[in-house]
Image (cartoon, rainbow, N blue to C red; front, side, top):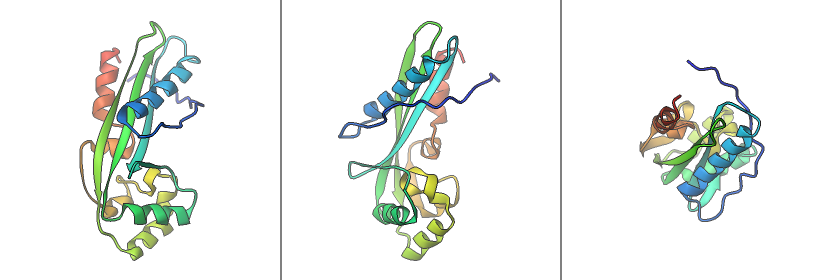
Length: 167
């Protein structure tokens, strides 16, 4: 297994509207390019994940009240989780990006379920205020697409990109 270093990219992550998979892939590519400027001789992976409902991005909630509002907005409805993944090879300047879209269907959970989940603290650092890989699974009715995309990094697409770059 190759060694890796996590290097945050300090870029403007503002997305144009309407939110498209290509726009999210563009953010991932800008992140990878920003880090590539500080990582000579490396293959850089960048990614960005957004939760989109009604054309609106649901980021990480600012606190419990916003988490409750987001979970009420999602309740009994579907939304999209879009992740852009990009790779930049600093040795030769080659780059590629892709986006993965998963449709998530939320269960018709109760206000009590929202309160229990928010009180756990789990939704406070999650885009869309839920984590499918943790307790938030109880709020999810199903999904179509990549499970790992909803978790935060579509492993299938990431593996394909990295393999194309010899990693």
